[in-house]
Amino acid sequence: MSRDRSVLVGKSGRYLIYIGVIWPVIGGITCLQDQIVAWCGDNALPYVAIGILIFSGVTAMSVYDRIPSRIATRIGFAGWFTGISLLYWYFWFGPGSLKMK
Image (cartoon, rainbow, N blue to C red):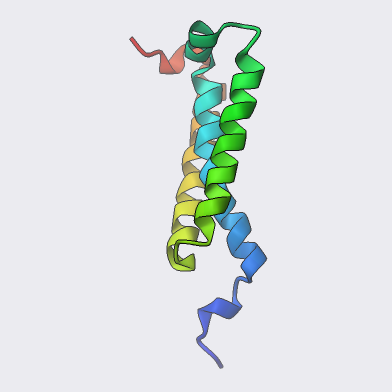
């Protein structure tokens, strides 16, 4: 039996794991939307949020080819965990749970 771990997860699977890098950005936008509204206003919030997501997605895609796949999967798992944890924190404890002073 071969112990080659590169066979276990293919290239597309590693990419899907790595794309978890943008989840903390999604969680951060969700948790800090009141501060973003105070900074840019109600009408511009969707555009600012979409712009931040597009920028972080394009940055993540351009960096993916330059880092080793071993590190990319670890960063991706950490991103999935952190982003989903932020979203759970926000939706379980409410919008005021992460107030910054």
